[in-house]
Image (cartoon, rainbow, N blue to C red):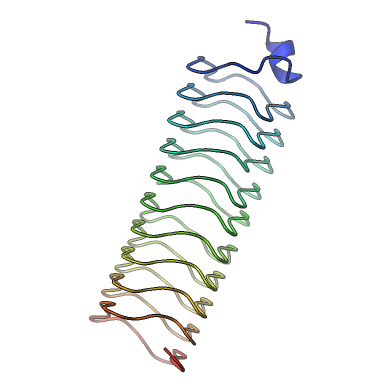
Length: 211
């Protein structure tokens, strides 16, 4: 397979391709079909994957720092991937596995993360405005200072999650499990808490007006 052609974006059909450990830094992979592809350990630093199809792809341990990932990642495996400062705004990450991934300063506003596995992940200070997190597993996740305004967290698992000073204004937390969660000084003004489980949650300084 001609890697120079792939890096230049001249190859648009790479479904099921084995690109493990390849150096694809700065590559133009926009609108490329990479469904089911293996990219484990690949370097995609600052790569352009906007509009790419990565449904069911394996990106374990990928270096995706500052990459444009406004793509389709339905059911993708991003375990241990480095997504620092990556652009995932509006990306389709439904059912994706993001365990042990690095998400520092990652842009996730409007992302579709329903059913995603984010257990124990650090999302401290991350922009998740309007994100769809319905049924997502965020147990033990660090969401301190995260922006979750108008996010849909219906039925999400947030047990033991750290939501200290998180912005949850107008968020939908109906049916969410917040057992043992830390909501110290979090802002839940206007949030939907119908059926929300808050057993043993820390609510000290939490803003609960109009909930």
